[in-house]
Amino acid sequence: MVFFLLVVFGLLSFTSSQVSHQYHFINNRNNWTEAQRICREMYTDLATVNNEDEMNSLFKTITVNSYDVYIGLYRSQVFRWQWTLSDNENTFQNWKNNEPDKNNNLGCAAMDKNGQWFSDSCDIQMQFVCFNATSNGKYIIIEVKKSWREAQEYCRTVHTDLANVRNSSENKDIKDIAKNDVWIGLFKDSWSWSDQSKSSFRFWNSSQLSNSRKDRDCVTVMLNQTGKWNDVQCNTTQPFICYGDLKSQSTTKQATPRPATATTKGNYTSKQPTQILTTGPEQATPRPATTNTEGNYTSTQPTQILTTGPEQDNLILVRENLTWSEAVTYCRKHHIDLVSIYSEEHQNKAARKVVEASTSHVWLGLRYTCTFNFWFWTKNREAGCYQNWASGHGPHGYEECGLSGAMESTGGHRWVGRPESERLNFICQICTNAF
Image (cartoon, rainbow, N blue to C red; front, side, top):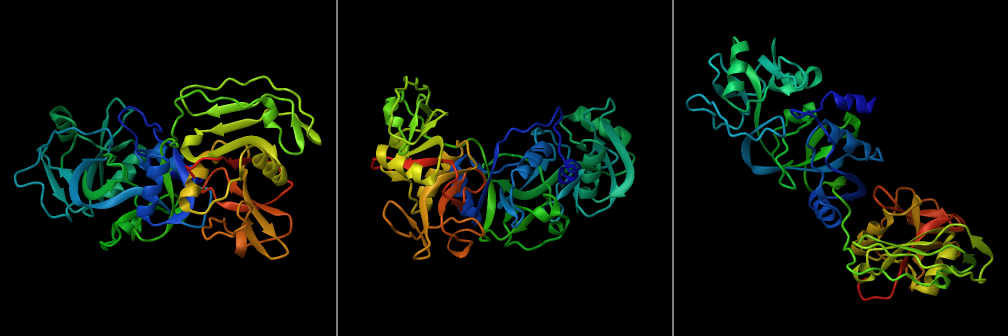
């Protein structure tokens, strides 16, 4: 039902809509500036939305229903005129004398019976012209009076959008079917995208349209309003949506696989080759495995070690499903230990790894002690000040004996307590000076 409702506000291009952005929901509450910084460090930027399909795609990434989420739209100091269709960046203009009006309250454009444009209040009721990308007669006059935003909603629902004008020929086509003043798809606002794109796509909540407060300079997607947008104060802490590919420093040399005997994991024996996966330009070639007898059971799956180069952040994701204790043994035998996280920087580095995991969670070097009733990192036996617990987990959540800490592979990469007998991928910390 939610996604059907989102379809009605969609914005199509002159040809077709498509999703050009990959979105990532980050379930950490930050102010808008911090959210922007994190998105730029880990991906490309806070989310930009160009059309209906992208809005649907963005909305599907939201995995919790507790808070509204930031996107990359913010209020700048410059008002500018723009067309409703994102691909319409033409320079053609046909304003009447002394138009457009400099009054920022006159933020929508109409065409008179002579084909000339003028600015007016968006709340004025008048007839309008829709554009239909799939119809032979692409301009349709609607002889019912509506406000500019009501007219746009109608055109988007029934056709494609309000009429956009790219040249004098199209301007004449609209004039020929309009006998009175009519709305066209030209509007003015001061909202800009974090990545400085020129997307004119908007999906405001109706209550926001009458909001005159100028201290609300950032935008959230409202979960209880089927994705409609609202302006909020930028110091409000909210989850957020990033877009783009996950950033990593690619290795420039071919990774050197460890001998198969080095993949022996604590209490079991691997009879499969080790596969070292890199995000660099070259893929490592697995070496044949040799059988090792140090263990109580035999692995039926290959060990996959995912790294973006030890020079980057001294973390290795091991895509093998082990219990927490087995993961500790493996990391201590071949590297240093299961990863410990003491800062947001460390958290972000680990988050870049876990997105490649084959399990829903990934083991961390985090353990709960029933005797003393607290969580601690196994590497230094310290509790640590930095925390990123999911709701209902950690020091203020449900705790019981036999729990160890894991990080979510998707979403906000929060920490959770999981039974240590579960078999999950895990992250080892290796010996470099980078972490």
